[in-house]
Length: 192
Image (cartoon, rainbow, N blue to C red; front, side):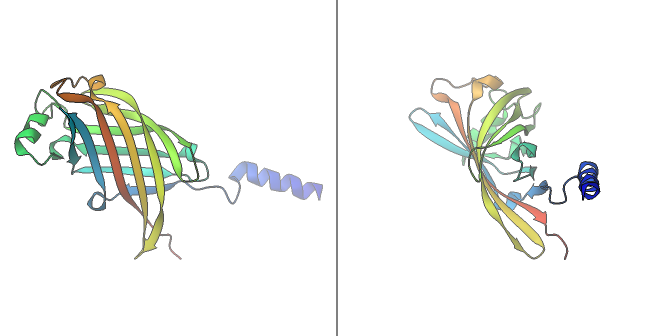
């Protein structure tokens, strides 16, 4: 019996526990996802979106600290329902889209705050600067159909745009930007 225990321990040490958690890779489906923001203009908050983006979520539910997420947004896809304002957002006063066409996020830390909720810390890079941000993330679950497993996610964060050097328009334009993510991300269902 002692010898069997030693062999079992050696097997687990060498190959890992047979029921070890798995990190699942989901690719963001931009057709069924949205990236929104709001910023104060005088007394109300003006909404906007980025229509072109991509990314992946590497999710380990059993050990969230092993999870990570990356996302890239195309600055030129900004849409605030006003062509003149959108063009202004792309120029030197705001996003400097000619020199910095992408906004990029890379997570650095995941921590569970509930059964399906997480605090996700990461680095947000835009207009040539990179600073830490925190998102409150909720995993909405997943559903399988036609060989694809679809997962749902929500995320929210508030950032200060001046940290990235975007200061134009104050005080009429607020510094606080509210960000809301509604994500559907897919992975292939296992065969068999």
